[in-house]
Every structure is written in structure tokens, then in C-alpha cells.
View (cartoon, rainbow, N blue to C red):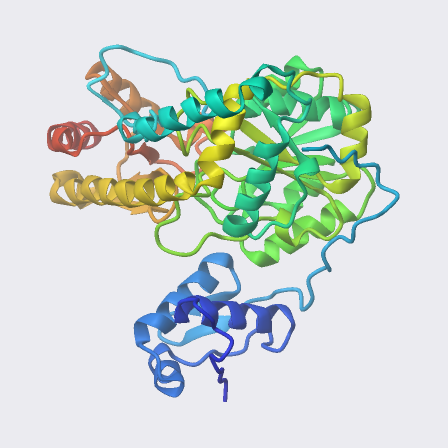
Length: 474
């Protein structure tokens, strides 16, 4: 009989501790593939916990792909490698110089009545008074530092603050020397192409972030599209395209919303480790905004071969005007970066870097994210409530609403996506479908539209939803 004790739980919530010990038993092979887990009610009675606690632990394991559900039968252990590769040990031969002390531009139209494609964050809730206070503190306390040239990878204080944040929030054990600061992820992509080389084949998810194709083409890089399946990046398509460097968003893919399960993550890491020169560029898009479960671990945190390059930005979590992004290099690439690209100047001002470092170090970022997570969750709930009250709901369903700042809306209609979008555009309503994020405009998931809800006023929705309904039925 499966049982656990909670003496080592510490201050963790019961559901989190139970999730962690179950996950460890699955990874270590103590719980075997196909093994039937106890029902929520029976497990709760056995452990002396609430059914809700068991359900929360199971839900997190389900999201991450460690278990799967069979209707009317229960939960079963999924196929997972019995042993994850050990964390990369620091190689003294690796050259690391220790130092001393986005969102894409979207087409705009002034008279959109309702823009479901806008992914702008709520600027009014940015803690401007706190940010201003920290800026003044930086000017008075670090005025000399602000005027010094920034190190190529960014000021050490900010990189240390980011390393601490990633450890506590994403479980990533990294050194500040692995971090490179840049003004936007697009700038960092240009650096990566120079670092990894133009003689490799780069891969782009399809559907996915299509601006990458323009960046690669501008840099003279050979790139190919890699299809997705129900579990994210298709390994079959990856091998068929003979890709060597792949860009992926495993935690919350845009636009599909897919969270890559652990079994697929392990296969992807194994693929990267098979051959020298293979790398995974992990874009941790929307990682802060997961509403229904704990944050999903990054690929970088389980990478034992040093093949994952982690990318993230503060533009989405703070405000687009603060164009500070960063990448985390594998330790084996740090020396190469410093030797070959160390002549580049950091593209973010010291003033902004020191201010953001203080914002992170003093706990303001965590508080801001917690507030915004609650705000966006409530905002999403209002949008969905209006949708369910409308006549459009008779022919619609939603998916992937528990993470990120968008969800998918499927409409049961015979009309082509392009016709629906064109007719709505004439009414001042902007809507994008899956075909807008594929390289050839193919309808990979027909009649499915992306709803970016952050810029939507729920009070304006009823009239607009009725118009969408009329377009889809006439």
C-alpha cells in the first residue's frame, strides 16, 4: 500500500510535499509505468489529508506528464525515464572569468473596437512609486557605478539577483557568470547565432514564434520548421528536419498552450546530448502566470549535459518599456561567449540594471507577480463568465485557460477561419487563429482562435460576442 510520512515537510503545504515525493518516486522508478495510484478519496483517508490536498498533488503531476488519467478508472503512472541525468558537475577546465564586486511588435489600428490579438500587459498596475523610489536610491547611493561602463554580460548585481530569483522560483542552480543581459530577446537571438555559428540548422516550432524566421533569415541562417503534436515538439519531425539547434517553449507554448510532459522533455534532452553541437533554446514564455498548478520545472533545471540555453524577459512581467531580457548559458559555453563576444557592450543602461536588481533583491518583484497573478486570474474569469453568458457559447468551447495570458476558443462553425476574421475586421474586431502562427498559413487546428484577454474590457464583451456569433452562423 502506498503511504508517506510528513516529518520532513517543513513549512511546505501538504499538497506540494506530496507532489514532490510522488514525483521523486516516479523519477527514481519506485513507482512503475502503468502502476495504478490510489483513488483521491482512499489516499486521503489513508494519509489523513483532505481529498482536495490529494487532488491538487495529482493535478500538478498530471500537468507535468508524470501521471495520466483514465476515465472512470483513475490515475496511472506515465512512461518516464527511471533516472534523470545527474546535474552537470563544474569542470575546472571550463574558462569562466569571475568578476568582482517582448513581445513582438504587432500591427496597430487606431479604431479596433475589440482587439483579441493584443498581448499588452496592464500598465496601470505597474508599481511606479516603488520603482521611482528605487531609482532615486540608486542615484544617491550608486551614482559612480551608474556612470561606469557596463560589463558585456551586464552588471554583476543584477545577474546575481536573477540567479537568486531563478533558484527560488524555478529551481535553477546557476552562476551569475552564466547570465547575459540584453535589451530584448531579439537582441539575444542575434548574439546566440554568432555564438553557436551560422553553419548549423536551426529549428522553429510550427505553429510558433514566427518572428524567429525573420531573425534567422536576416542572419543568413538555415532554418526549418518542426511540427508539434499533442505533447508539444514532435521528436519525429525534429529528426526528420535534421535540426541541430531548436527553439522551444516547453512550459507554456504559444499559441497552443501545451505544457510539454516530462517524458517528452527527457527525449528532447536525450536528443540534444546525442551529438556535439546540438542545443535547445528554452523560451520560458509566460512562466510566471500559471493559475491552476505550481510552476512547471524548466528544461534547464533537469539538463545534465549542458545543452539548454534558457531565455526569459521582464517585459511581460513588468512592462514592455523596461526592455530587459536575459539568457542563461550552459557553463561550457560561458568561456566561448566571453572570448568571442566579450567585446560587445551591454545594451541595457546601468541605471535600469541597478534599479531592477534592487527590485528583485528587496522582494518587490515577487510581490508584484503575486498581485498580477491574482489580477489576471480574476480578469480571465470575468472574460470567460461573459463568454458563457453569450449565445456564442452554444457553439464554442475553451482550452488551455489555466496558464498564461491567453486561452484558446474553438467555435463549431462551417465557415473558414479567414472568412470569419475578414468579416469581423470589417466590424472593427481583431481575431487571430492558429493559421496566423504557422509558416504557411495552414489550419493546423481549424476554427480555433487565440484570445489574449489582458487588454479586453469584460464590460464591452457582450455586444462583441453577439457579433461574432452572428458572423459564425450566417
